[in-house]
Length: 290
Ligand SMILES: C[S@@+](CC[C@H](N)C(=O)[O-])C[C@H]1O[C@@H](n2cnc3c(N)ncnc32)[C@H](O)[C@@H]1O
Image 1: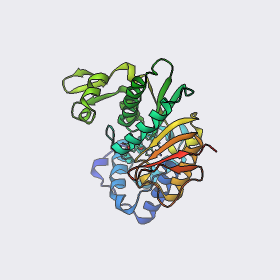
Image 2: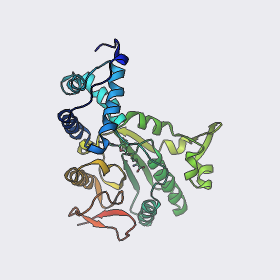
Image 3: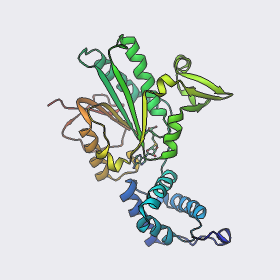
Image 4: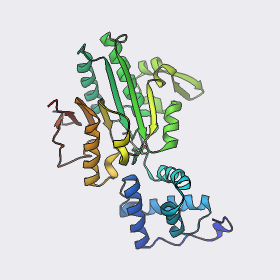
């Protein structure tokens, strides 16, 4: 890899054959389909990364990713994936899903036999989703009077290491936290500096952030989840992959547990162990209790 004169050499445009190879490589590794409409997005982001590495053509970069030593390839995939994935998110994104989550959690809290509650945010991006879940859970637990006899936690996973780092830090701009109700902002956040807020340690320590490729979800050491929330992650995945991933998520769910997906993310199919929640505004399912 040489850095000489890279800026002077403009990158040759990607041939159709190369595009198909890159499409297949990314899909097999990350699950995401890069359609024709995102071809220029792919070329731009590959180009930026190749410039950083001093690589001059798509073929050489492809070879690095396919044939390079694992110690080199793994961190490179982490960086590239981060550039290619969409990390847009917000607090309480899609309120009807959070209303549905709240109803389910309240039902669980009314059952004294339930002594712990575990929620998993899959594809958690920079943390807004798991913090929304944690705030909601804490408020519901407090109002149910079960703060003392219930253990709870939120798992938060994503493929992007930088996104997870931001989540762990739990710092957000003043503008971003406006999506959180005023009373909850006062309860859960504290100022760091002008225009910047951080979640208090008491809520941060309830969330465990971990890197996980959804394509390898079966390896995650999480079982018997009460709720799995996986919104706006499967949109770029092919139908057969979505079904496969949902099937693996079901294996991680407790009987009676709730799975929340993004609306319209799974159509024309339902896992045999799932029953759709009767709310047309959300795409949520509970796992049959057998
Ligand atoms: C659009 S964000 C959605 C964030 C959040 N769930 C929400 O609804 O606001 C999609 C997230 O999925 C993650 N992602 C994409 N492909 C993934 C994969 N193969 N494994 C794990 N996470 C992935 C991205 O890194 C990104 O953070």
